[in-house]
Image (tube, rainbow, N blue to C red; front, side, top):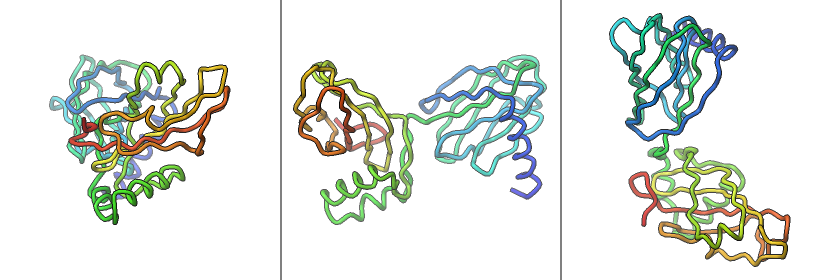
Length: 243
């Protein structure tokens, strides 16, 4: 991208951010969504942890499209009738957007890929560890101290399957998650629903695909009103947890 393109994209983005209502969606690849776009102001689309490499519509519908330094795209249209926009990213993630144009603030859309996978560096990180236990302990330590390995990405897949009994015992709040090549690691904050202290056990959070469970800070008992983080490590295959 030449200097003029970068400056132009930044100018459009600055104008957009001051007027647009930001939206965020989590999608599977191939999904089709609807959105209201502006035909008077620039519009912005970003895919988390990825780069948009193609934005296509019927010839003549888009009057401009400019990549931004962070991998998003800013586009403009003067169309008055609905049209379909096809978006594709560097990783192969793609979705279509049924756009309804109008005189409104520019659209600002961030899309999270629900099946996002870590890159080649994540595969190298997972393969180079000396042992299974070294891989798990090292990754958990990095996760707790927010030192994401190269190639790992944030994911919106923060699901931690638990039994009905565990759901009845603890209030669970998903916090954050990373996805590597074959590993997903999730932090869930839990608090007791009981008026008395509850003994903690890692087995409460075991399910198919789980490689390890730990508590941060390390506790044996959760007192009423107290909170602890559950760190759950999953083995994944093809974007989904193994069963």
